[in-house]
Length: 555
Image 1 (cartoon, helix red, strand yellow):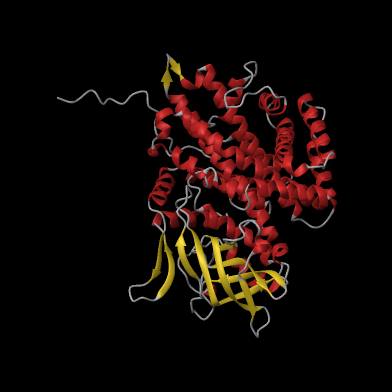
Image 2 (cartoon, rainbow, N blue to C red):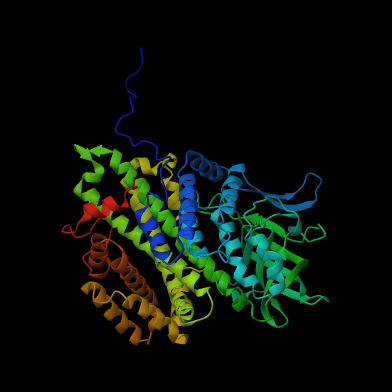
């Protein structure tokens, strides 16, 4: 006789096969908005590209790859069976499937394509929802391009390989591969974010631009990559160098991986401590003594990817919460229709849409900044100087509490590994720490405010585009100007200032572009102060049902 005690009811079905791109109104509307001046052919091509990537991201196959890659983390192989030093990192095949799909989808190719940054940002947002850890080498490879362009000879050799849509795993001479990946090594034990305290030494060789390195890197991202950009002290000061893993003659460069980090999250991705032994060959990038200036655009690009990655995590967590509450009933009605749960979901939806709108605005600004010089390009470059660290500070900070609240929407089901929410929660702090923690971003904003008045002018012009449309936004802009007028002791209140800048910028974008119910709820809570200290404390008089309906998967 069949047991009847294990009948499954009132459980959400698997969230699989959904439209990750077409089902996200905030994302699709944002991409179309920023492509308004593009040709119909380009718009159609990008729409088709992102639709396909979104379907792949929502597929059962991609979800399984993500599970396998995280349950089978990378393994360091320092030696072969004969005792030869090989310093290789072994990954599960699922990692290579994820990484290969990212590369073949053009997620390392932004700098030379029409609307390249916008389409790549949207693609990175979509594909990261399948699994986040493999995004590190994707981001590093993409971001290495502007640093290498400081040396035309290096750029001519490496850029076609960096932007290639071909993924080939394994270490071989770069000239024998159809595409390569880049990593980065700046941080050292004694310095942390203070990279000018680095002690790695670069000794020049006879050939111009060639050096050997001696030193240790405390955090090296993506150690299985084909080459790395690192900082070291040359005779002329801190300098940027390119360190290949395999030299053109096929010999292995001296690159000793001492251990892999055992991290809170980001389990599928390898982060390592590495050693340069005095014979490690390196090629100088840029001038001696100008290492930070050379690598700064790479840092800006990876910081932008931190924003994209966090916005992607937020959307995925929201999607999971919406799906669960739509199918789970309690007290006689679906959870999604319960007034208190609706308040929580609407609050999460506001956070996600604000992050998405800001992400796409940054990407569109980068596309405009990369065009031929002119007043508009200069203005966008100035805008990015403040907007990137501001967004990096705030969006990455909001990710963890939002993912935690979304997990709670699933109750005990969300606390179980099989739901996928614990993996999202462990992943959520990484972007706030990577490429400079919150204090580093806040200090960078202060530096720009004090030294680059054109950046503040561009920022204020941007938020001023929405002036007069919402009284709470107008009041918040006025308060911000008061804050910025008093620079005395500003470092101690830098976080408060940067938070206010981020909220004013997000409010301006939503007032201009989001539906009225979304903009109204955001301004009432984030700018008007009618909000508690936790999610789900929005004013009950708002049109929360419409906010939730907009966030649900379309179609």
